[in-house]
Image 1 (tube, rainbow, N blue to C red):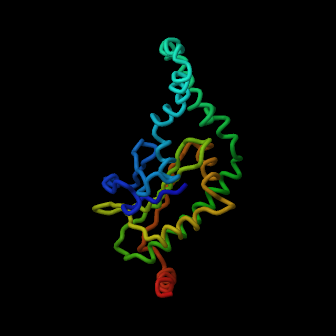
Image 2 (cartoon, helix red, strand yellow; image 1 turned 45 degrees about the vertical axis):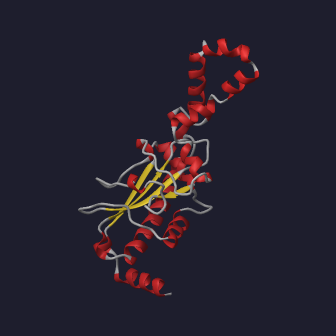
Image 3 (cartoon, rainbow, N blue to C red; image 1 turned 135 degrees about the horizontal axis):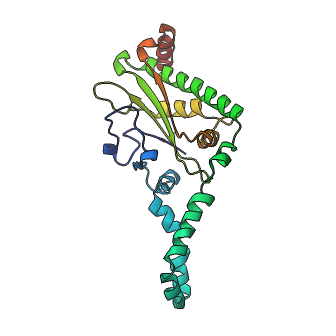
Length: 229
């Protein structure tokens, strides 16, 4: 599930503040919710909140108390088993706890192949965006950040973060967002594939950089032709 970090897409635009580039969100626990509330993407973001996952894991407890009130005392005396149950869910059901097991999720050859492909696609995206924008936009950082939870639908934050005196998130049109999504991921290399690579390498943030001033005249003419077409 892709969430493009632009002010038009998030419920609280004030959360998109940059003091340095690149900025991370998921790995730092910063909550950014999509503007479309109660969508599948919204609930996937909610699932990133640890308290929400703990409540879901322990949801059978209140059900048991309703069905069997006499169990109230034994349950109240069992905080340690409940805590161990939550740890079990977090570590073994939602994730792969062993570093060796995570490295075995995908072969090193496939890791290198996937990252090489992603780099080429990221450079193409940045070139198209940079060619279509004013050269004074500043150095562009394409930041792709993924959730570390492995056993649910992947959650991916994608943003363009220009560097400069006042760094900010680049506003992306609907067409640009569609272009980026289709350029970065397809059936051969999707979000799930990238998540396997990230888990194997324990690196869930990928950043690609391009100076728009280095873009060729040919690429700018192509961008101009697309805008007029």
